[in-house]
Image: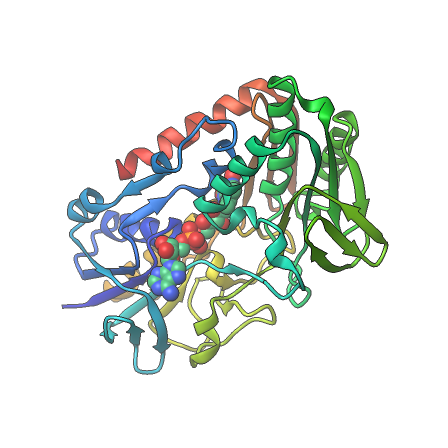
Length: 375
Ligand SMILES: Cc1cc2nc3c(=O)[nH]c(=O)nc-3n(C[C@H](O)[C@H](O)[C@H](O)COP(=O)(O)OP(=O)(O)OC[C@H]3O[C@@H](n4cnc5c(N)ncnc54)[C@H](O)[C@@H]3O)c2cc1C
């Protein structure tokens, strides 16, 4: 029987499971990941305001795996021999006919003193730390910033940093203590968020001005110290620092025979095949793909890539040539707790809607709808 090993149990991995079964693929599927739960990261932005709890964002996958006849191997992948199609794990090797790499990426930790900042997108624990630090602060300066991977400018996750900025501002206003805080937004880029499009950047910068946020833009970062950020253009004193560095691939990627992009991600093609490694596929944050320069590292894009590769595997198993390209698309509702700004990109379309109340509710409704598949 054909064996498909899926590495990871995040967005791309689980979408691949659903799409393979939807396409009638009856192969044995093994999902290899340390935990049998989906962490719904996009909603961690709401933890500081108490709209969500950490436990509520961890969805157990036992029933989902049973429904889709999937074996879960609780293990961490430590390496891979693509030529032999063997996955190395801390629980021993796993052989498969097809290997789908969907382990996500990680954030660069090279900046000296990075441990003095919270990296918001590292997971649910980071959002809990932000909530605890904010609750303990009586006042002061909150500095929020982001940077990219200098070797791969697209390896950035900026949207959630704008969300944290606007959400914390709204939250402090609701709590009646905003006047005791200053906000500073910093980035080496003079126009942060450029992959959302120029109009969106204008809208974001205008929103910062409207909310009384000071900006420190266009200065290369030097280091972070306890209580301050040092850039080539000056220092920012801060009581709470949220900083999102650029993204790169997992450490074990570099120990394999997989082709890597300049930023350390696995090089995929338009069909989500790993370049030059038949039977090995990649989707989501783990990969680097051809496409427009705004191609996002998003759950939505991870899903689109997983759908494409599942279709391609289904075709191959049915004796057909794979031909399904993934759709490059960006959809982002940038939430601010009581409203949201929508950005959509596909081909030449770049739609930006200003902050509107219903978009906050649409983001909540989408979460509910999306998670139905896993409940
Ligand atoms: C605060 C925040 C807000 C966001 N907002 C949005 C949004 O509004 N819209 C959107 O589309 N995206 C959003 N994102 C981005 C989105 O969450 C990621 O792009 C998405 O999680 C990527 O999916 P993935 O499947 O590639 O990887 P992940 O979801 O990161 O999944 C990786 C999986 O691999 C597993 N894994 C890791 N290492 C190993 C290993 N060595 N061995 C085995 N398994 C391993 C992990 O446990 C996990 O199960 C947001 C992210 C954050 C943090």
